[in-house]
Length: 233
Image (cartoon, rainbow, N blue to C red; front, top):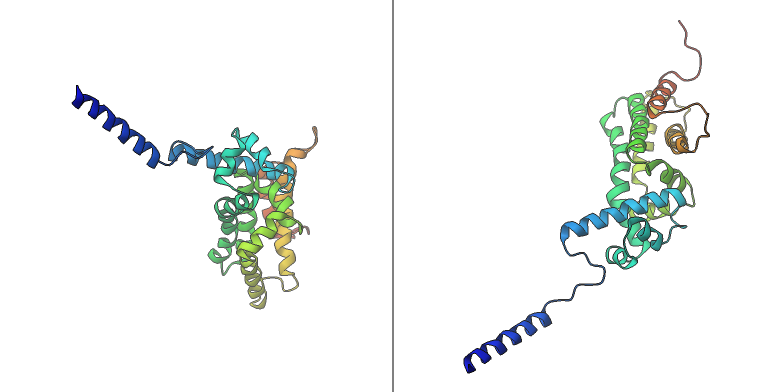
């Protein structure tokens, strides 16, 4: 009997020691890595959707948590501040899309018309695949006061934009591209031809002529290759 009692006491002591040395689960912390990854991605999806719809400055973290169906404590476990959330969003969602645009200029280094046309097509493809791309870009990147633009420049500078402008300037010097074009304005023009129409598609009034991504791709290609002047026989 005594031996049994000692054994029970030892087991109880060991249990208490294990509980004392095992770190308590933080409030809002997921119970598994897979579950945690799913929650994190869900929060990024919700943030992108709301930022595109309302703007970053007008979207509090509590609204993102509600959209994702989690508690504010859960959101703060992954993203302590809105700035941290923005940094992750830039690195994991925005930069891969943006890098795809400028990679085209390296792929078609000796064919400026193909590079510019493919970049426009790539913008349309990205806006079709990711519904947040066009409205968020128009609201937060093209705008000089956009919080996303400022944060991206603070983290990554304007390397991508410089790559494109340097390619355009080189092509002009080589006689491959119209020398009267303004490199900076040409870059902005591509946004106007692609992301503005994509962002406005959902806002078109009922009864208005429908515009599809395929129609826009064809229109942009024709405009870039042939301009607006009538074609000679």
